[in-house]
Each structure stands twice: as structure tokens, then as C-alpha cells.
Length: 163
Image 1 (spheres, rainbow, N blue to C red):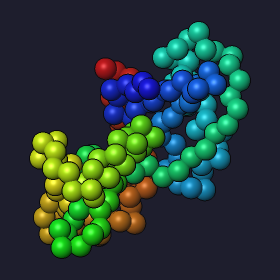
Image 2 (image 1 turned 180 degrees about the horizontal axis):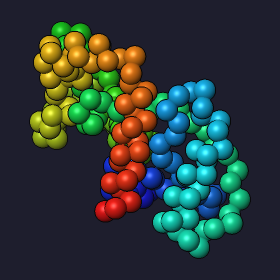
Image 3 (image 1 turned 60 degrees about the vertical axis):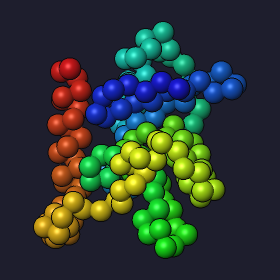
């Protein structure tokens, strides 16, 4: 498994049958997801990182919503210790690779293991807005999220390509 350090990450993984899995961000809306421009971005990213793979056959593609938290950090937590409810969310574009890790850590927590790693904020802080003002502001601007996301995708892309 390989991932880069860009804000808009690409990840690559060699599969057991010697095929390559690639992934990254996709469209801003579900209606635009089948647009071929998104697949072209993935393939261009693969060729940029691995020029020798130009011309390989692409067998499958799929897409889904990006799971990003407000602070860009994942959470694997039990929000209320009085309830047997846990969640793992906010993978921020690393869902395929991080989900296996999150599942293992969540199973350890459910089994009652107490590991030093659980002292990290991603294991003991809930996914919530830092204060009431931010929560109200987030709800007020909810109809404009996709516009903001489109702007951020362009901004992050510029930053990634300049660095």
C-alpha cells in the first residue's frame, strides 16, 4: 500500500492478482460521479507517480462520498461510555487503507483492551464541532457545502502541485 502526502491524496495498492488499485477524490456531487473526467484524474495521477504504467488496462472503477471530519482527523471512539455504541468515521480520503486499521482498533476497544495508543485524540474525542458557534455556523452554511468543497478541491490541488 502506498499513499502520498498531498492534501488531495492518491493511494495505490498491488492486488494479489498483480493488478493495481488506485484511489483518490472524485466528484463533488453524486450526479456528476460517472463523468469520465474523474476517472481521467485518477489515471493521470497513476501515470504521474508511475510513468511505466502508462497504457495499462483499467478494469473497474467505483466512487462514493469522501468521509472527512471538520478537523481532518479520523475518529474511532465510544462517544458515551454508558452505551455500547462505537463508531469509526472521518478517514479523510484514506478510507480503503484506514478502514482495516479502524476495524482492528474498534474490535480491541469493544473487547475491553486498554492500549496506550487509545490515549490519542482520535480514540477518545467525539466527532463534534469544537464549540456551539461553529455548530450554528456550520448549519447556516450547509446549503453551500458543495460550493465550498469545489473551491477547496481547486485550492488544495494548486497547493499540492506547487509543493
